[in-house]
Amino acid sequence: MTPSILYFSPQLASWKTQLDTLLLTCGQAVEWQAVQSIDQSPVLSVVLLAEKDIKASDWPLLASRKTIVIVDEWSLERSVTWIQRGAANCFARDDEHLAAWIISELSQFTLSRSHSDEDDVLQVIIDAIPVPIFFKDHLHIYRGCNTAFCQSLGFSREKVIGHSVYDVAPKHLADTYYEADRKLLAKGGTQCYEAEVRFSDGSLHEMEFNKAVFTKSNGQALGQVGVMLDVTERNQLIRQLDKATRTDPLTGTSNRREFNLIIHDEFNKRKHSEQTLSLMTLDVDFFKKINDRFGHGGGDQALQLIANWLQSQLRSSDTLFRVGGEEFYILMRDTDIQNALKTAERLCKGMATHTFLINQQSVHITLSAGVIELAPTTDLESALDMVDKALYEAKSDGRNCVCPVFQ
Ligand SMILES: Nc1nc2c(ncn2[C@@H]2O[C@H](COP(=O)(O)OP(=O)(O)OP(=O)(O)O)[C@@H](O)[C@H]2O)c(=O)[nH]1
Image 1 (cartoon, helix red, strand yellow):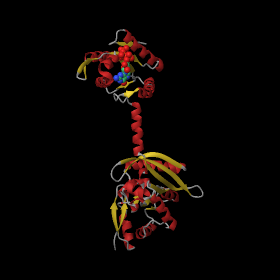
Image 2 (cartoon, rainbow, N blue to C red):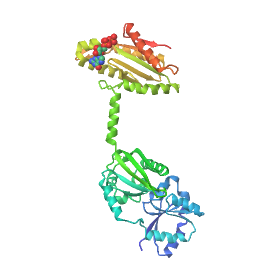
Image 3 (cartoon, rainbow, N blue to C red):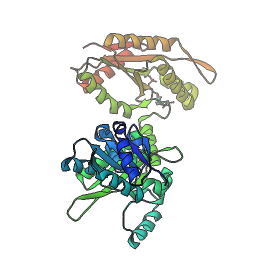
Image 4 (cartoon, rainbow, N blue to C red):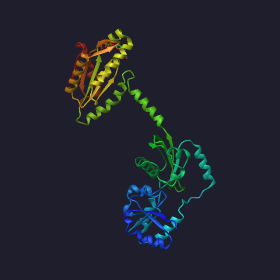
Protein backbone atom coordinates (compact mmCIF):
# COMPACT_ATOMS: atom_id res chain seq x y z
CA MET A 1 0.00 0.00 0.00
CA THR A 2 1.62 3.29 -1.12
CA PRO A 3 0.90 6.05 1.38
CA SER A 4 -0.74 9.15 -0.07
CA ILE A 5 0.36 12.52 1.22
CA LEU A 6 -2.08 14.61 3.22
CA TYR A 7 -1.05 18.18 4.02
CA PHE A 8 -2.46 19.68 7.19
CA SER A 9 -2.31 22.90 9.18
CA PRO A 10 -1.01 23.24 12.80
CA GLN A 11 -4.46 23.49 14.45
CA LEU A 12 -5.18 19.92 13.32
CA ALA A 13 -2.01 18.36 14.79
CA SER A 14 -3.64 16.86 17.88
CA TRP A 15 -6.67 15.57 15.96
CA LYS A 16 -4.96 13.89 13.02
CA THR A 17 -4.24 10.61 14.93
CA GLN A 18 -7.99 10.08 15.28
CA LEU A 19 -8.52 10.50 11.53
CA ASP A 20 -5.41 8.49 10.73
CA THR A 21 -6.76 5.47 12.65
CA LEU A 22 -10.04 5.74 10.77
CA LEU A 23 -8.25 5.94 7.41
CA LEU A 24 -6.05 2.93 8.25
CA THR A 25 -9.09 0.85 9.20
CA CYS A 26 -10.35 1.48 5.68
CA GLY A 27 -6.99 0.45 4.20
CA GLN A 28 -5.82 3.94 3.32
CA ALA A 29 -2.23 4.64 4.38
CA VAL A 30 -1.52 8.32 4.74
CA GLU A 31 1.71 10.25 5.09
CA TRP A 32 1.02 13.49 6.99
CA GLN A 33 2.94 16.63 6.14
CA ALA A 34 2.53 19.71 8.30
CA VAL A 35 2.35 23.08 6.50
CA GLN A 36 2.34 26.50 8.14
CA SER A 37 0.24 27.96 5.33
CA ILE A 38 -1.47 26.66 2.19
CA ASP A 39 1.24 27.92 -0.19
CA GLN A 40 3.64 25.37 1.34
CA SER A 41 1.55 22.53 -0.10
CA PRO A 42 1.94 21.62 -3.76
CA VAL A 43 -0.75 22.53 -6.25
CA LEU A 44 -3.42 19.83 -6.78
CA SER A 45 -2.54 18.14 -3.44
CA VAL A 46 -5.13 17.31 -0.81
CA VAL A 47 -4.85 19.81 2.04
CA LEU A 48 -6.71 19.79 5.34
CA LEU A 49 -6.87 23.22 6.92
CA ALA A 50 -8.48 24.28 10.15
CA GLU A 51 -10.70 27.28 9.50
CA LYS A 52 -8.69 29.31 12.04
CA ASP A 53 -5.47 28.75 10.10
CA ILE A 54 -6.79 30.29 6.87
CA LYS A 55 -6.02 33.96 6.29
CA ALA A 56 -7.93 36.03 3.71
CA SER A 57 -4.69 36.21 1.69
CA ASP A 58 -4.83 32.37 1.37
CA TRP A 59 -8.24 32.40 -0.37
CA PRO A 60 -6.83 32.75 -3.91
CA LEU A 61 -4.94 29.46 -3.39
CA LEU A 62 -7.82 27.37 -2.05
CA ALA A 63 -9.10 26.27 -5.46
CA SER A 64 -5.68 25.31 -6.80
CA ARG A 65 -5.47 22.55 -4.17
CA LYS A 66 -8.13 20.07 -3.06
CA THR A 67 -8.67 22.06 0.11
CA ILE A 68 -10.80 20.63 2.87
CA VAL A 69 -11.74 23.15 5.53
CA ILE A 70 -12.28 21.72 9.00
CA VAL A 71 -14.63 23.76 11.18
CA ASP A 72 -15.53 23.38 14.86
CA GLU A 73 -19.22 23.84 14.15
CA TRP A 74 -20.51 22.93 10.72
CA SER A 75 -23.41 24.75 9.06
CA LEU A 76 -24.57 24.66 5.46
CA GLU A 77 -24.05 28.39 5.15
CA ARG A 78 -20.46 28.16 6.41
CA SER A 79 -19.73 25.24 4.16
CA VAL A 80 -21.08 27.06 1.09
CA THR A 81 -19.02 30.16 1.97
CA TRP A 82 -15.81 28.09 1.96
CA ILE A 83 -16.74 26.28 -1.25
CA GLN A 84 -17.44 29.61 -2.94
CA ARG A 85 -13.97 30.77 -1.87
CA GLY A 86 -12.52 27.76 -3.68
CA ALA A 87 -12.41 25.00 -1.05
CA ALA A 88 -13.28 21.50 -2.29
CA ASN A 89 -15.36 20.78 0.81
CA CYS A 90 -16.00 21.72 4.41
CA PHE A 91 -16.40 19.25 7.30
CA ALA A 92 -16.85 19.34 11.06
CA ARG A 93 -13.97 17.75 13.04
CA ASP A 94 -16.17 14.89 14.15
CA ASP A 95 -17.89 14.24 10.80
CA GLU A 96 -17.61 10.50 10.18
CA HIS A 97 -17.97 11.02 6.41
CA LEU A 98 -14.69 12.90 6.23
CA ALA A 99 -12.55 9.74 6.08
CA ALA A 100 -14.60 8.33 3.20
CA TRP A 101 -14.39 11.60 1.32
CA ILE A 102 -10.61 11.77 1.73
CA ILE A 103 -10.21 8.18 0.51
CA SER A 104 -12.28 8.99 -2.55
CA GLU A 105 -10.20 12.11 -3.28
CA LEU A 106 -6.86 10.36 -2.80
CA SER A 107 -7.80 7.42 -5.00
CA GLN A 108 -9.39 9.22 -7.95
CA PHE A 109 -8.03 12.73 -7.86
CA THR A 110 -8.15 14.15 -11.37
CA LEU A 111 -9.55 17.31 -12.84
CA SER A 112 -12.98 16.35 -14.08
CA ARG A 113 -13.61 18.00 -17.35
CA SER A 114 -15.12 16.47 -20.47
CA HIS A 115 -12.88 16.74 -23.49
CA SER A 116 -14.23 17.35 -26.97
CA ASP A 117 -12.94 17.71 -30.54
CA GLU A 118 -13.80 21.42 -30.38
CA ASP A 119 -11.37 21.72 -27.47
CA ASP A 120 -8.59 20.36 -29.71
CA VAL A 121 -9.44 22.79 -32.52
CA LEU A 122 -9.57 25.70 -30.10
CA GLN A 123 -6.19 24.66 -28.65
CA VAL A 124 -4.61 24.55 -32.15
CA ILE A 125 -6.04 27.99 -32.94
CA ILE A 126 -4.75 29.64 -29.79
CA ASP A 127 -1.37 27.89 -30.11
CA ALA A 128 -1.02 29.42 -33.59
CA ILE A 129 -1.40 32.93 -32.15
CA PRO A 130 2.07 34.21 -31.24
CA VAL A 131 1.03 36.22 -28.17
CA PRO A 132 0.33 34.72 -24.73
CA ILE A 133 -3.32 33.75 -24.16
CA PHE A 134 -4.85 32.22 -21.04
CA PHE A 135 -8.23 31.56 -19.52
CA LYS A 136 -9.21 31.06 -15.92
CA ASP A 137 -12.37 29.95 -14.13
CA HIS A 138 -14.42 32.04 -11.70
CA LEU A 139 -12.13 30.89 -8.85
CA HIS A 140 -9.08 32.36 -10.62
CA ILE A 141 -7.66 28.95 -11.56
CA TYR A 142 -6.02 28.57 -14.99
CA ARG A 143 -8.11 26.24 -17.15
CA GLY A 144 -6.27 26.76 -20.44
CA CYS A 145 -3.42 28.60 -22.14
CA ASN A 146 -1.49 28.62 -25.40
CA THR A 147 2.11 27.77 -26.27
CA ALA A 148 3.22 31.44 -26.24
CA PHE A 149 1.93 31.77 -22.66
CA CYS A 150 3.85 28.67 -21.51
CA GLN A 151 7.02 29.76 -23.33
CA SER A 152 7.02 33.28 -21.91
CA LEU A 153 6.59 32.04 -18.33
CA GLY A 154 8.78 28.97 -18.80
CA PHE A 155 6.17 26.51 -17.50
CA SER A 156 4.68 23.46 -19.17
CA ARG A 157 0.91 23.52 -19.76
CA GLU A 158 0.52 21.00 -16.90
CA LYS A 159 2.31 23.40 -14.56
CA VAL A 160 -0.18 26.14 -15.48
CA ILE A 161 -3.56 24.43 -15.75
CA GLY A 162 -5.18 23.86 -12.39
CA HIS A 163 -2.90 26.43 -10.77
CA SER A 164 -3.46 29.98 -9.56
CA VAL A 165 -1.39 33.08 -10.40
CA TYR A 166 0.31 32.65 -7.03
CA ASP A 167 1.77 29.39 -8.31
CA VAL A 168 3.24 30.84 -11.52
CA ALA A 169 4.31 34.39 -10.54
CA PRO A 170 6.22 36.04 -7.67
CA LYS A 171 3.86 37.13 -4.88
CA HIS A 172 4.11 40.90 -5.46
CA LEU A 173 3.20 40.48 -9.15
CA ALA A 174 0.55 37.83 -8.42
CA ASP A 175 -1.15 40.27 -6.02
CA THR A 176 -1.52 42.78 -8.90
CA TYR A 177 -2.94 40.18 -11.32
CA TYR A 178 -5.31 38.72 -8.72
CA GLU A 179 -6.67 42.15 -7.82
CA ALA A 180 -7.27 43.00 -11.50
CA ASP A 181 -8.94 39.59 -12.06
CA ARG A 182 -11.17 40.09 -9.03
CA LYS A 183 -12.28 43.54 -10.23
CA LEU A 184 -13.03 42.26 -13.74
CA LEU A 185 -15.10 39.30 -12.47
CA ALA A 186 -17.07 41.62 -10.19
CA LYS A 187 -17.71 44.21 -12.91
CA GLY A 188 -17.98 41.97 -15.98
CA GLY A 189 -17.25 43.08 -19.55
CA THR A 190 -13.69 43.79 -20.65
CA GLN A 191 -10.54 45.20 -19.07
CA CYS A 192 -7.28 46.60 -20.38
CA TYR A 193 -4.27 47.49 -18.24
CA GLU A 194 -0.50 47.27 -18.20
CA ALA A 195 1.48 45.22 -15.69
CA GLU A 196 4.96 43.75 -15.43
CA VAL A 197 5.58 40.06 -16.11
CA ARG A 198 8.73 38.12 -15.19
CA PHE A 199 9.68 35.90 -18.18
CA SER A 200 11.37 32.51 -17.89
CA ASP A 201 14.80 34.03 -18.73
CA GLY A 202 14.43 36.36 -15.72
CA SER A 203 13.72 39.48 -17.78
CA LEU A 204 10.90 41.80 -16.72
CA HIS A 205 8.49 42.76 -19.52
CA GLU A 206 5.81 45.43 -19.65
CA MET A 207 2.67 43.68 -20.85
CA GLU A 208 -0.69 45.05 -21.93
CA PHE A 209 -3.43 42.74 -20.65
CA ASN A 210 -6.64 42.64 -22.71
CA LYS A 211 -9.19 40.61 -20.81
CA ALA A 212 -12.87 39.71 -21.03
CA VAL A 213 -15.32 37.83 -18.83
CA PHE A 214 -17.20 34.87 -20.29
CA THR A 215 -20.58 34.10 -18.80
CA LYS A 216 -23.32 31.49 -18.64
CA SER A 217 -26.55 32.22 -20.55
CA ASN A 218 -27.98 33.65 -17.29
CA GLY A 219 -25.14 36.18 -17.12
CA GLN A 220 -23.27 34.48 -14.27
CA ALA A 221 -19.49 34.84 -14.69
CA LEU A 222 -17.81 31.55 -15.61
CA GLY A 223 -14.32 32.95 -15.88
CA GLN A 224 -12.11 35.24 -17.87
CA VAL A 225 -9.88 35.12 -20.92
CA GLY A 226 -6.74 37.22 -21.28
CA VAL A 227 -4.43 38.15 -24.15
CA MET A 228 -1.03 39.66 -23.30
CA LEU A 229 0.80 42.04 -25.64
CA ASP A 230 4.46 42.78 -24.99
CA VAL A 231 4.67 46.59 -24.98
CA THR A 232 8.18 46.86 -23.47
CA GLU A 233 9.83 48.24 -26.64
CA ARG A 234 6.91 50.54 -27.47
CA ASN A 235 6.95 52.00 -23.95
CA GLN A 236 10.73 52.44 -24.00
CA LEU A 237 10.40 54.36 -27.27
CA ILE A 238 7.62 56.53 -25.85
CA ARG A 239 9.75 57.29 -22.77
CA GLN A 240 12.78 58.13 -24.96
CA LEU A 241 10.67 60.40 -27.16
CA ASP A 242 9.12 62.06 -24.14
CA LYS A 243 12.56 62.64 -22.60
CA ALA A 244 13.85 64.04 -25.91
CA THR A 245 10.99 66.54 -26.14
CA ARG A 246 11.83 67.76 -22.63
CA THR A 247 15.62 67.98 -23.08
CA ASP A 248 17.81 70.55 -24.82
CA PRO A 249 19.89 68.48 -27.27
CA LEU A 250 22.92 70.83 -27.13
CA THR A 251 23.47 71.02 -23.36
CA GLY A 252 21.44 68.05 -22.08
CA THR A 253 19.62 70.30 -19.62
CA SER A 254 15.82 70.49 -19.42
CA ASN A 255 14.29 72.79 -22.04
CA ARG A 256 11.53 75.43 -22.07
CA ARG A 257 8.86 72.80 -22.78
CA GLU A 258 9.87 70.92 -19.60
CA PHE A 259 9.85 74.24 -17.70
CA ASN A 260 6.31 74.97 -18.89
CA LEU A 261 5.24 71.45 -17.92
CA ILE A 262 6.59 71.50 -14.37
CA ILE A 263 6.31 75.16 -13.32
CA HIS A 264 2.50 74.98 -12.91
CA ASP A 265 2.79 71.85 -10.75
CA GLU A 266 5.56 73.35 -8.63
CA PHE A 267 3.66 76.62 -8.27
CA ASN A 268 0.47 74.82 -7.20
CA LYS A 269 2.43 72.69 -4.71
CA ARG A 270 3.93 75.90 -3.32
CA LYS A 271 0.42 77.33 -2.85
CA HIS A 272 -0.54 74.43 -0.59
CA SER A 273 2.65 74.15 1.47
CA GLU A 274 4.99 76.25 3.57
CA GLN A 275 7.93 75.55 1.27
CA THR A 276 9.35 78.52 -0.59
CA LEU A 277 10.12 78.55 -4.32
CA SER A 278 12.24 80.99 -6.34
CA LEU A 279 13.14 81.45 -9.98
CA MET A 280 16.33 82.88 -11.47
CA THR A 281 16.64 84.01 -15.10
CA LEU A 282 20.16 84.14 -16.51
CA ASP A 283 21.43 85.52 -19.80
CA VAL A 284 25.02 85.28 -21.08
CA ASP A 285 26.48 88.73 -21.70
CA PHE A 286 27.70 89.62 -25.19
CA PHE A 287 27.35 86.05 -26.38
CA LYS A 288 27.35 87.26 -29.98
CA LYS A 289 31.04 88.15 -29.49
CA ILE A 290 31.85 84.49 -28.66
CA ASN A 291 30.16 83.37 -31.86
CA ASP A 292 32.01 86.07 -33.78
CA ARG A 293 35.34 85.00 -32.27
CA PHE A 294 35.03 81.20 -32.40
CA GLY A 295 32.32 80.60 -34.97
CA HIS A 296 28.96 78.93 -34.29
CA GLY A 297 30.65 75.63 -33.29
CA GLY A 298 32.77 77.45 -30.70
CA GLY A 299 29.61 79.23 -29.47
CA ASP A 300 27.88 75.85 -29.08
CA GLN A 301 30.85 74.56 -27.13
CA ALA A 302 30.70 77.63 -24.87
CA LEU A 303 27.00 77.01 -24.18
CA GLN A 304 27.77 73.39 -23.19
CA LEU A 305 30.58 74.52 -20.86
CA ILE A 306 28.37 77.21 -19.31
CA ALA A 307 25.53 74.73 -18.71
CA ASN A 308 27.92 72.17 -17.16
CA TRP A 309 29.47 74.80 -14.92
CA LEU A 310 26.06 76.09 -13.78
CA GLN A 311 24.87 72.54 -13.11
CA SER A 312 27.97 71.86 -11.00
CA GLN A 313 27.14 74.87 -8.80
CA LEU A 314 23.55 73.84 -8.00
CA ARG A 315 21.94 71.71 -5.29
CA SER A 316 20.12 68.55 -6.36
CA SER A 317 16.81 70.27 -5.57
CA ASP A 318 17.51 73.06 -8.11
CA THR A 319 16.68 72.55 -11.79
CA LEU A 320 18.51 74.19 -14.66
CA PHE A 321 16.67 74.87 -17.93
CA ARG A 322 18.00 76.25 -21.20
CA VAL A 323 14.99 78.26 -22.32
CA GLY A 324 16.47 80.13 -25.29
CA GLY A 325 19.72 80.69 -27.22
CA GLU A 326 21.92 81.91 -24.34
CA GLU A 327 19.21 82.21 -21.74
CA PHE A 328 18.78 79.88 -18.73
CA TYR A 329 16.25 79.50 -15.90
CA ILE A 330 17.01 77.99 -12.52
CA LEU A 331 14.08 76.82 -10.42
CA MET A 332 15.10 76.74 -6.76
CA ARG A 333 12.95 74.75 -4.35
CA ASP A 334 12.96 75.59 -0.60
CA THR A 335 14.52 78.97 -1.42
CA ASP A 336 13.23 82.40 -0.43
CA ILE A 337 14.20 85.68 -2.17
CA GLN A 338 17.18 86.36 0.14
CA ASN A 339 18.74 82.96 -0.56
CA ALA A 340 17.85 83.16 -4.25
CA LEU A 341 19.64 86.52 -4.45
CA LYS A 342 22.70 85.10 -2.67
CA THR A 343 22.80 82.15 -5.09
CA ALA A 344 22.45 84.41 -8.14
CA GLU A 345 25.28 86.65 -6.91
CA ARG A 346 27.46 83.63 -6.19
CA LEU A 347 26.84 82.28 -9.71
CA CYS A 348 27.53 85.65 -11.38
CA LYS A 349 30.77 86.17 -9.37
CA GLY A 350 31.85 82.56 -9.90
CA MET A 351 31.21 82.74 -13.64
CA ALA A 352 33.09 86.04 -13.99
CA THR A 353 36.19 84.60 -12.32
CA HIS A 354 36.08 81.21 -14.06
CA THR A 355 38.28 80.60 -17.09
CA PHE A 356 36.77 78.53 -19.89
CA LEU A 357 38.91 76.96 -22.58
CA ILE A 358 37.52 77.09 -26.12
CA ASN A 359 39.77 76.00 -28.98
CA GLN A 360 42.64 76.10 -26.46
CA GLN A 361 42.02 79.78 -25.81
CA SER A 362 41.03 81.26 -22.43
CA VAL A 363 37.62 82.86 -22.38
CA HIS A 364 35.94 84.86 -19.62
CA ILE A 365 32.17 84.98 -19.56
CA THR A 366 29.77 87.02 -17.45
CA LEU A 367 26.09 86.61 -16.71
CA SER A 368 23.19 88.96 -16.00
CA ALA A 369 20.43 87.69 -13.76
CA GLY A 370 16.97 88.42 -12.39
CA VAL A 371 15.48 86.65 -9.35
CA ILE A 372 12.00 86.42 -7.91
CA GLU A 373 10.33 84.45 -5.13
CA LEU A 374 7.21 82.73 -6.46
CA ALA A 375 4.99 83.62 -3.52
CA PRO A 376 1.60 81.89 -3.31
CA THR A 377 -0.14 85.25 -3.60
CA THR A 378 1.60 86.07 -6.92
CA ASP A 379 0.03 85.33 -10.26
CA LEU A 380 2.45 83.03 -12.13
CA GLU A 381 2.24 84.81 -15.50
CA SER A 382 2.97 88.23 -13.99
CA ALA A 383 5.80 86.73 -11.86
CA LEU A 384 7.46 85.38 -15.03
CA ASP A 385 6.98 88.77 -16.66
CA MET A 386 8.53 90.59 -13.67
CA VAL A 387 11.61 88.36 -13.47
CA ASP A 388 12.25 88.75 -17.23
CA LYS A 389 12.04 92.53 -16.78
CA ALA A 390 14.47 92.28 -13.84
CA LEU A 391 16.95 90.45 -16.10
CA TYR A 392 16.75 93.23 -18.69
CA GLU A 393 17.26 95.78 -15.92
CA ALA A 394 20.46 93.91 -15.01
CA LYS A 395 21.50 94.17 -18.66
CA SER A 396 20.81 97.93 -18.72
CA ASP A 397 22.64 98.35 -15.38
CA GLY A 398 25.84 97.33 -17.16
CA ARG A 399 25.54 93.47 -17.15
CA ASN A 400 27.44 91.02 -14.86
CA CYS A 401 24.99 91.77 -12.06
CA VAL A 402 21.74 90.57 -10.43
CA CYS A 403 18.42 92.40 -10.19
CA PRO A 404 15.99 90.98 -7.62
CA VAL A 405 12.23 91.48 -7.70
CA PHE A 406 11.00 92.48 -4.22
CA GLN A 407 7.21 92.29 -3.93
N1 LIG B 1 26.46 79.18 -31.06
C1 LIG B 1 25.21 79.43 -30.74
N2 LIG B 1 24.78 80.69 -30.71
C2 LIG B 1 23.51 80.94 -30.38
C3 LIG B 1 22.61 79.92 -30.08
N3 LIG B 1 21.42 80.47 -29.79
C4 LIG B 1 21.57 81.81 -29.89
N4 LIG B 1 22.83 82.10 -30.24
C5 LIG B 1 23.45 83.38 -30.48
O1 LIG B 1 23.46 84.13 -29.28
C6 LIG B 1 23.58 85.50 -29.66
C7 LIG B 1 22.69 86.33 -28.79
O2 LIG B 1 22.93 87.65 -29.14
P1 LIG B 1 22.18 88.84 -28.51
O3 LIG B 1 20.72 88.50 -28.29
O4 LIG B 1 22.47 90.05 -29.36
O5 LIG B 1 22.79 88.98 -27.11
P2 LIG B 1 24.27 89.05 -26.58
O6 LIG B 1 25.27 89.15 -27.70
O7 LIG B 1 24.46 87.92 -25.64
O8 LIG B 1 24.25 90.37 -25.79
P3 LIG B 1 23.45 90.72 -24.47
O9 LIG B 1 22.50 89.63 -24.21
O10 LIG B 1 22.75 92.00 -24.75
O11 LIG B 1 24.47 90.82 -23.43
C8 LIG B 1 23.20 85.58 -31.15
O12 LIG B 1 24.37 85.83 -31.89
C9 LIG B 1 22.68 84.21 -31.47
O13 LIG B 1 22.95 83.81 -32.80
C10 LIG B 1 23.09 78.58 -30.16
O14 LIG B 1 22.39 77.60 -29.92
N5 LIG B 1 24.38 78.38 -30.48
